[in-house]
Length: 305
Ligand SMILES: NC(=O)c1ccc[n+]([C@@H]2O[C@H](COP(=O)([O-])OP(=O)(O)OC[C@H]3O[C@@H](n4cnc5c(N)ncnc54)[C@H](OP(=O)(O)O)[C@@H]3O)[C@@H](O)[C@H]2O)c1
Image (cartoon, rainbow, N blue to C red):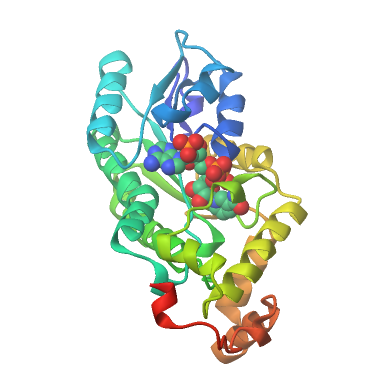
């Protein structure tokens, strides 16, 4: 039975990363649904985006939560347990994306990427599992990306973090099935939103984009390409929020939830096409990829480091 259908019980939903995009759209939906108790969270620095729209009431709380900070996770989950004795549904939505070729990533950037998209969601999940297991129900909904399956140049670290999230979610699906806790991986493709503005660059990536380094053409072609695809996409954060609500309300949510047509098509291409064909088609589809190998005589390794 779906949690929402248990007579008189208001399931407790915790959502991360609600200051913008998909998280904000989901917060808006849940604000108007009295059948749920809801905790929407954002980093302290962007909490005002929530406070200007919503306010705490008997069933709706706004809390600061940086998913890379284990102490904050313990505090927020501890407070909810004290107040409502449960967290029934967790939506690990907070996420960031680095735009950097792998050679330009550094340990700090790699850790920032992984902590936000993988390690943080895992910490939060670990905090809520024991109670879910004991109650015999619960939902973990992890917002991944088609990038978890389809890697692109300059997005390797982002893809790796989402692939880690997906693999761990897959294991968790098996581990939790006997306990009645359901795990889903939501995989949006390109979303019509402003989130491309929130992309992070490693120090070397920033330099390389401004200097004429051997990778500068990657940055100069991939960045506008992604922005264009996002602007062209017909999938909005609101639609994704509706689909996530469908997962919350479904009695038997699937493990894999590809959200948009492009996510579905990329998924099929990646799984069904022979590898040699798939990689060549993808390379060909990428903007100005025929020019990526051109030489930069003015560039020296010294200039970029
Ligand atoms: N947009 C797309 O095309 C797309 C496609 C596939 C998958 N996704 C995934 O969908 C999810 C939501 O993305 P979006 O499109 O809604 O992007 P977005 O508008 O950039 O939202 C990301 C949210 O994550 C928050 N966040 C970042 N670092 C955080 C941290 N350490 N702790 C807590 N919150 C943090 C941001 O808050 P701040 O304001 O504090 O930075 C923001 O609220 C992400 O997991 C993303 O990877 C997006």
